[in-house]
Length: 289
Image (cartoon, rainbow, N blue to C red; front, top):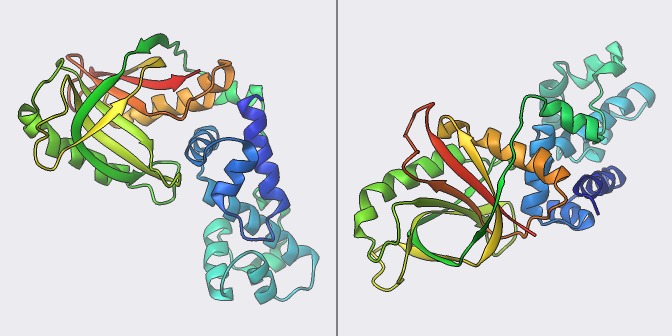
């Protein structure tokens, strides 16, 4: 099944269950995609996190109920998944710049937050200025050694990438010489799901080694199995690398006929990488089948 159709199946599941508690792993299960990748694709397509979308849709239905029914605001609040009328009012005002009482008087249906629909034209539109064609490469098995952290990516409401990842590299770079048996001058950022398969991810700042013995204190190893990767070139400051990743997930992966293996994504830093420079080059790779 095409990725776009799978994401749409997840959306339809949300629409059918807006009156009930919705767990993100159930949405992803209905779509037949891992939770991390469903959230990543959804964020790349809509620029909105999955949790924010669900809340927005519930607020939209609450708005409609305010206009078309005589239900009490507290009952509408509870039906929308809020624990109290106060928390509902705060969220409603943030979304629509008016209180539920004011909305009942104004009655502007144009403010509704509508259900997302995806199509090829939409994908072309959001990527109209992008033209990235990856190099398809075979990455042989690698043993990497470095430092590790857990973080939440841009697809999560808990996004803390900016706090976690630069600090990890700041910790690792001065200690790279402690790593024995290094294979090359390349450094790797490794992004993969945690064992719990939630939206919490693992990130390694690491280098390839020929022997994982004699690990420096506080470092860990991670193995990358032999895989086929789609390798993209990111040109510009590494701070904007998410623009490249969004293109990969929202456009190229959708239309390529390839599937993500759910293995680790890689960032590759070599001689072309220049810290804090618009002339920098980094390579972003995703494992495909």
